[in-house]
Length: 543
Image (cartoon, rainbow, N blue to C red; front, side, top):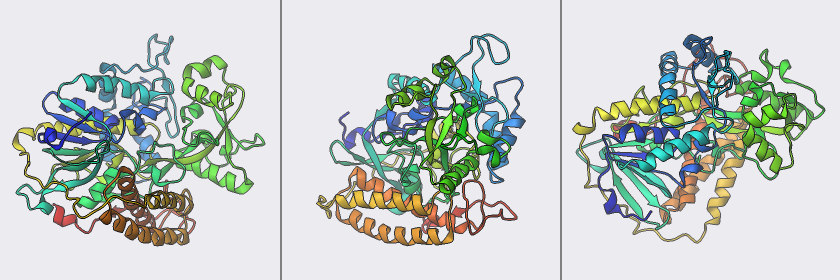
C-alpha cells in the first residue's frame, strides 16, 4: 500500500505490531476509534502465526481456576505476581469465547474428553497438572491469525500497513509539547525509504519479544525487541529481562534451525532420549518430560555437554500413525520434507531461544510509565510469567491484556487531544551508507556472544565478557546510526543492541539461580524473590 505522511495525520490509536495482541486490540477498539496497525513485514511473519501449542484456559469441569493459578505460580519460581496471575486466569474463558466468536476453529473430539460428544480437545503441556490447553491441531497460531486477519481486513476503521519499521516514540516532554506523554511515533516506510511522523492519541507497543538476540531461536526474524528498546529510550522502566525462555525442543537439522517441535508432543507421551535411546528426564524432575521448560532445557543442555552429542531425540513413535496425523499434521509434514517420519523415527531436537519473560513494565491496563503509551503481549512485563513462563500462558496473556487495554483506552478517547504539530524527521545531516557489511557483522557478533555468554547456563566471567562486548558495539552502532540514513536492518541492529545490554545488566544484577536464570556462581535461591527493575536515565524527564 502506497502512503504519505499526510494520510496519517489522524490516528486515534497507533498499534505497532500485528500479532495476537495487536490484532485483538485493534478489533476491540475499531467500533469506536480509527486504528492504524503497523507491521514490519506481512502479518504472517509474526510469532503468532507460527505458534503451535495452544491457549491455556480452564475448560474441563474436572479442572479449576485455583489449579491453573497454582501451576502458574509454581512454574514462575516465586516471581509471579499472584494478583496478575489470578486476574489473567479468571479471564481466560472470556478470551476463548471471543476467539470462537471471531471464527477460530479449535480442535474437537468425536467423543469429548469427558465422554461428552463435541467437546473441545484439550491437551496437557509442561507445568500443567490438568489438560487445559485448547488448540487447533498443531497450528493454533495460524488458526487464530487467519480468523483475526479476516475480521481486520473487513473493518472500515482499521488500516493495516505492512513493511513499516518504527524508529522511535514521540514524547511530548522531549519535544516541548503541551501534552507531555507519548504522541505517536516516527516510522520508516521500507518501500519508499521515507520516514513518517505518525501522531496518535494513544500508542500501543505490541512488537513481540527479543529472542533473535540469540544465535539459535524458534522465533521469526522480526523478534528483535523493537518495542522494548523504543520504550527504554523513551524513558520506560523494564523488568526481569534476564529471564529468556529456551524452548527445550527445536528441530535440529541443517536445513531448518528455527522450527519448533511443540510441547504438546510431550503432553501426549513423547519421551526425550539420548542418541543411544536412554531416557534421562526422570533423573532431573518427578514430572520427567512434563517438567517446566527451564528444567527440561537445562537437562538437555547438561546431557549434550556431558555426552558430547549434538542433539537429543524426542520419540512419539509409541502413538499410532492416525493419532499423530490427526494431532500433529504440521510437524509431521515439516519433518517428512526433511526425511524424518515422526511416526517411526525420533525427532532430533535442541533448545533454542523462544520467549522473553521480561519486558516493558505495565499495570493491569497495559499502561507503561509514560502517559498515552501502552505495551501488550510479549513486549510487556505484567508479572504473569515470573522467572519462567508456563506453556500456553503467552497467547492467553495477549488476549487478556489486549482486552484490558482496549477497555481503558475507550474510556479516554474523547478527552485525549491529538497533537498534530509535531516535528518531521530530519535526515539532512546524514548520507546513504556504503558500509552495510558492518550491520551484518555486528548483528552476527551480538547473537553469537549472547548465545555463548548469556545462554542457558551463565557465569560472572561470561557475563562480564558480554558486557564489555556490548558496550563497545553500542558506541559503534550509535556512531553508524548518527551518520547514515536509517534502514530496517540498521534499526533492528540498534534495537537488538539495546535489548542485549538490558538482558546482560539484568543477569549481572541477579545474584542467585531462579527459573530461567541459572548461574554457576550463584546456584542457590536468594532468601526472597525480587523482580529485577532497570530504570532508564531519562525516567523522570519523560513523565
